[in-house]
Image 1 (cartoon, rainbow, N blue to C red):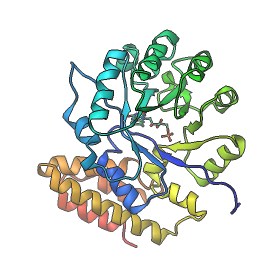
Image 2 (image 1 turned 60 degrees about the vertical axis):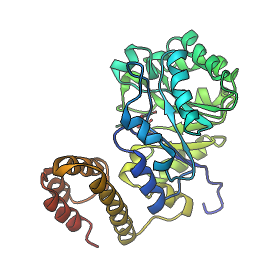
Image 3 (image 1 turned 120 degrees about the horizontal axis):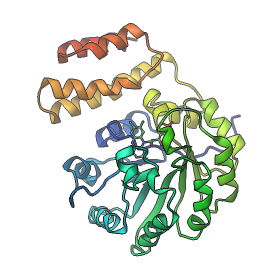
Image 4 (image 1 turned 45 degrees about the vertical axis):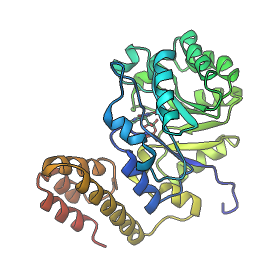
Length: 314
Ligand SMILES: Cc1cc2nc3c(=O)[nH]c(=O)nc-3n(C[C@H](O)[C@H](O)[C@H](O)COP(=O)(O)O)c2cc1C
């Protein structure tokens, strides 16, 4: 329906994919996104990775609204990352309580902390030390039981949060299996914070289904669906799908911006080929398989360029 209220679309953080050049090029070419999030920043052996520092550097980010994300198991780790965010001029931060990677989850980071409400509360308590910062949380239904989020809800409701994004899966599922929208609904009914839905949104129909099932939702966060169709948020905001020609034209422009950036910033053929090839892991899944195969097989940049030009020929 044309006159339906549009909900804000948030671009999910995706480590290895949505780095600063990607986010910048996405907003410049496609847009339609209310907020971009950085992949998580963490303290490792007392310090930060250069790549993670560079990714949040304000001079490397041109999008209108960006929220840096952190992952931490203890207030001590959390304080260090927030101090870095503040030093870079950020006034918002998103706390990752959803990452399913076993190495991190075992250390009670990401979704691994969800079964331990007292540890989650310590992190929420820590937020109070930073009255100038606004915090949000990105979480899953639980680590292994979707009721874990309900056990946390009275606690979450008690703290000041800008919003909660809930990925409708448990950590043990990683990124596979069905999303559990009934469990999402139970949380939605009791949550006092603005709530954002996340998980397996790939089409305009998927967006509309969520909005009609959860009319009080504050937004939808999309990850892989936007990597596959970077125009998804734009199409939703404009109520119109792009034609094949428009889509290929935009993808071509997007690819050109990213290719030029990586060519100028990465060293050597191999680094460049490997980086630009990752773009195609999710992009345009319905594209003729023979083009995808050609791109995936490339080891030389000249061959890669020719393969992409052929694939995106209008
Ligand atoms: C490769 C990859 C990297 C991810 N990195 C992050 C991350 O750094 N922080 C985070 O909160 N979620 C991360 N996620 C989870 C996504 O943000 C999102 O919650 C998840 O993919 C489900 O949404 P989708 O079905 O729309 O992709 C990652 C997911 C994938 C597949």
